[in-house]
Length: 92
Image (tube, one colour):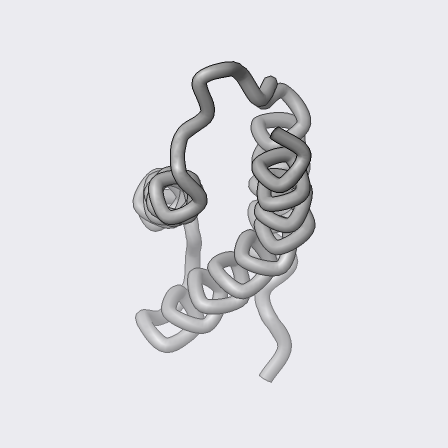
């Protein structure tokens, strides 16, 4: 079963907003540890999931699928950001 269009649109919006958040980050000195940054990013993902949880539509199964897809997409976006942060830490 395909996601409802409203949920696809919501996921698209969330991805765009999350991408903006990641692109706004400036790595500063003193840096936080890699583990701390992973925790921060996971907290951001959870924040977005909780925020959009109230906005997804459909039956519970549809809502669960939409939130699962959103989490997957946000985790995919997070990976290059965390790789970039690891490279930043190694350059210090």
